[in-house]
Image (cartoon, rainbow, N blue to C red; front, top):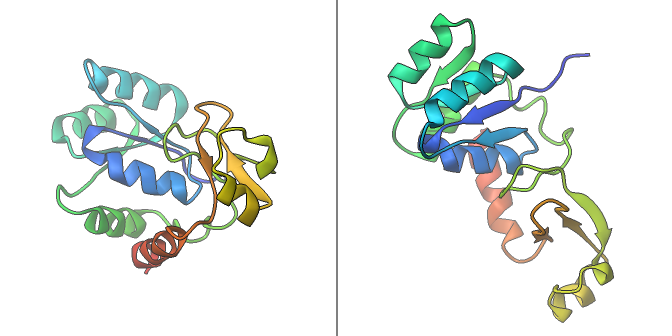
Length: 157
């Protein structure tokens, strides 16, 4: 069975990384000092697809036998459109585990009553929430969920 693509995003693609995670894709985000070398090493070791706006990094990865996509430097929508023209992302949407948009870890569906810091109104409205055991972030389908769904639809069409 074919494995879903996994990614490494550079600091020019932080928003793209976040939305790929929201869709369930495994997408590391690497920024800061020595980021290019760290991205290059990790990409070659793991076979992840590098999403970069840096032409020099893109060339290095390709020359060394890795796989990279040079993303356009403007909007999230254009970056996403460009990416989905290169890779069929739609076939994976809805089939991947939920991921934390902050740290990329897989979320666990838990009873809302088990999360101590959750607002009482959330515990009353939602029996279950998704929790990240790595960074502690908790997600639920609140009023913001409508906007997230709209954005996902825009990104995938």
